[in-house]
Length: 283
Ligand code: 2HA
Ligand code: ZN
Image 1 (cartoon, rainbow, N blue to C red):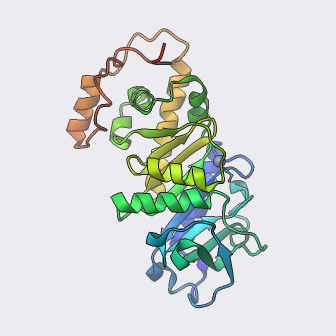
Image 2 (tube, protein in one colour):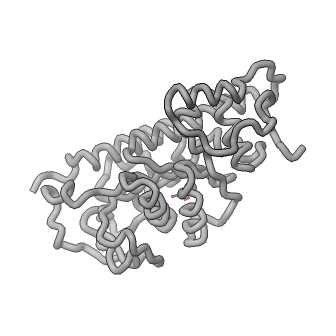
Image 3 (cartoon, helix red, strand yellow):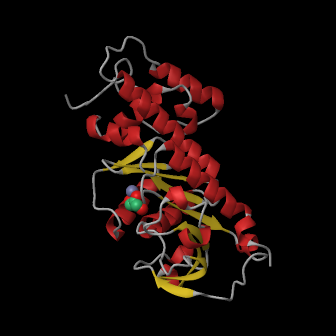
């Protein structure tokens, strides 16, 4: 057997966690990641019949039955993952309709996967229905998106539109926009189900006054998605209190989309918001 610590998905996950920590998105035990793995990626590294422990999940996800996930552990610090990967990460196989997870590697201190496992698995199921190649669900607390959720209208079209206006590349990176959940108690099946529902129409879901979820085909793509939205939120917060005299007009946003061949979320342009930065469209 090869060394699992040298497996490309494990090294990529640790690198992503370190980068996220460096960005300031994952203080203390904040954040969690799950990466779907193919059996073929694991076969050289683990005895897939050797189940260490069985962990109840508390939900059902029949479409994920038999799938493998590399996932971060509950209470673990992104800052430390590179020092103790076998303690802070785990590889599980979902069985019994998703109601149970077989631990194949990791969580060596007897712990288990993130408290946000329901939101992760339900989001995987939702994204796989729209994109069979989706592999990543990633949650973190990026400072500027979090801050923006206190001062900006949480209407999804308005929030998306403001982010799109902040950097030219936003419409290319997230043409599907950002969906928004109001503040909710985290770590529950209820927020998991609500997040998954939002994941059906966008790869970014803001948890107001908490953080953000992203989904994608690779860790890099998903990291870049959040990084781009977070950059836009940072620009917004730098200009929100200043008189805005120039913007990218809606026609410009449409031109970018047409030029790069992406389809913008229906109905998010030409809502009369284009020439001004909207702090609260209800005003
Ligand atoms: O894992 O971020 O939402 C800690 C969290 C919970
Ligand atoms: Zn969180």
